[in-house]
Length: 479
Image (cartoon, rainbow, N blue to C red; front, top):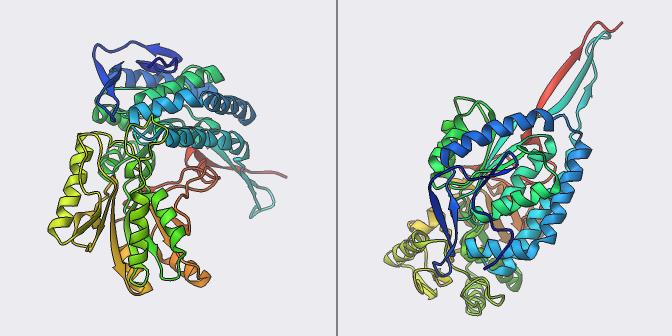
């Protein structure tokens, strides 16, 4: 496919770098076909990017928030203007249906536009003094060079959600996308250049060795903050590697999202929310539902309607606009999904829909009943199109099941009782709660979790705070 936004090398200090003797291939997960070969910049290009970003930061931080806002606005407009090409790249390398990719482009651009404005609102404070001869002031300043390590499942939005507040605050950034989805990141770099960001302010480094590249970013004294979206296991590694330099960290890690359906819920609305939350991107999102917890009085009704909805899915290549279930990202993801289903069957689970891989690229949307907490899918993040459905009888039981996990990213529940809604929302141990809603992500609200789902928030007015240092200034001897 000819696409003028496809690039094959790292972008550092305003230059497309050919540094690196090796290449790696990017494949379409829907059919295994090669999309492009990309130059592996590795650790060498990572070190160059750190130096370039550090130099650029010295001048970028001195620009006004209004100036930075103007450039961010241009970047946002360019992303929207090139939506069709960007959407195709996202679908090609991540496999998600093209309509979901188009939504991601809009979602990603919304963060750029939001923080273009929010950067002008990083207000400080004047503190009432404790003596007459002093004046106490608080200002906020950019932390410095920021490294954004991003996942393949939202190759555009996870970048803009991290780097837009950083850039708006006056930081320079280094983006390290996964080897599965580097092309979207490189396309964003091209559009950022067209928007007018100075050389070195935005850098994208691509390579096949994420461990070595990530370690360099974590251990560098010039990098002041790491923002990472990915597994809890890797998040712990990055945190340990960053401990020597005491970096700021934003970690958006694994999830085990519950979806509670109470006996007074609007079942049709709950099924609609379940479909949107569970099966988007074939279940490969961090806030996808992992466990359905349904009251015994509406259990059969919810299940029957959920099965009917799932049976309407069209599975296939995401470039087909009628497809709503695309491929798994790779064979390892297929095998992991198979292991969850096999374990559930061995422990008494009953397959009501799906239950098998169609080939080495696709896995059927699957619904499992008669599940219990001893199954792997009750305790580990599924990250695939598998929906286990638990049964409960009391509110307390539902809340206990929902909170019985080391994770605390997103949660959902459906009820039409306002008192119950308040109480349950307050008792759920999660950073985000969807109440009668399955799609909760927006640029204007804080995104992030608690417990082993990480810390820090992205989006909203809170999202820029992690990229700012607070400085207290005491003016003395004022007579």
